[in-house]
Image 1 (cartoon, rainbow, N blue to C red):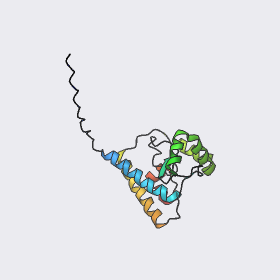
Image 2 (cartoon, rainbow, N blue to C red; image 1 turned 90 degrees about the vertical axis):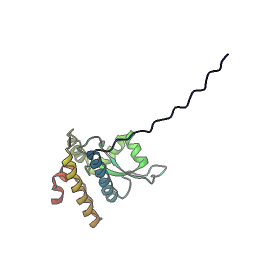
Image 3 (cartoon, one colour; image 1 turned 135 degrees about the horizontal axis):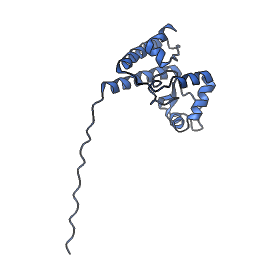
Image 4 (tube, helix red, strand yellow; image 1 turned 120 degrees about the vertical axis):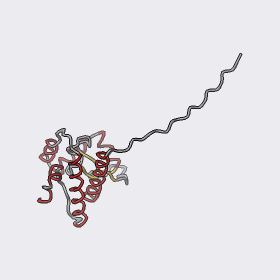
Length: 163
């Protein structure tokens, strides 16, 4: 009886990563600026501490999913959360929705819902949005007591500076 030869180890090929497109780079930079604004604005998790306490990881949490591009960088839709609360709100969004309505009212919630139309945002609009967000962040650094809660449409049009 002839023994079978041992199988040869297969060498894994190195994964090839694609370079990010200019649009993806803009979205990543916008996410970073919004995170800075929200963490400076909220100063802590928006929900009461769970029995085990808040985690130390601070994150921007979205009431309406980030996949909705018309609200992804809307400062009314993004609030600071610890990582454990953010995870809990991803699986049970009704908790965060109830908290939002208690804090800001039903009208604010329906305004967000109304603004969540599926619209493609053009790359030039992302660039303009990034410029406006940087201006908001600069104003926030100059005046730490200022709490910006602007719609993405107001930020994009520049109307936030007149309010």
